[in-house]
Amino acid sequence: MATQSQHAFQWALTTVIMVELTGTVAAGSFARGCAARDMQVLKMIEERENTKLVSAEQLRDAMLTMMHARTVCHEGYVLDALAIYDQIAQNIAARVLSGRTQSTEIR
Image (cartoon, rainbow, N blue to C red; front, side):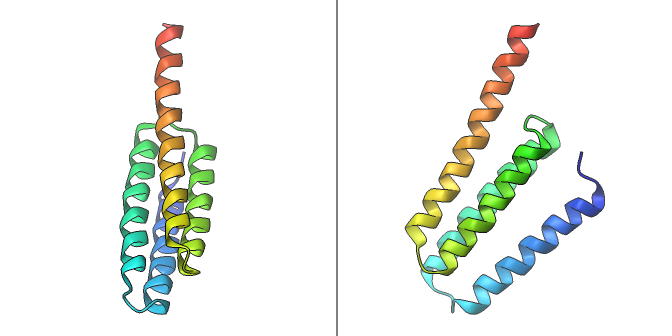
């Protein structure tokens, strides 16, 4: 279970990284594309965190993978970064579906 300070740290880290990406890459369209997808995936992660459908370890792994996607985007490999974001979203969705299936079978 994430404490309020851990949640605040995640937001602070995300903000710092987003500012760094935006500041370094002068308002290029690829930065906007990565930033938009980043925010979508981050929102998805937060929703899963609040519902406890995905373990804290899996959410942490997703956040680390997001940091990698941000680096890839920053290096100019936008399509690769977007593919990484898509993979994160697919993994989280698959874990939620498999978790629901398991909980239904146990009942």
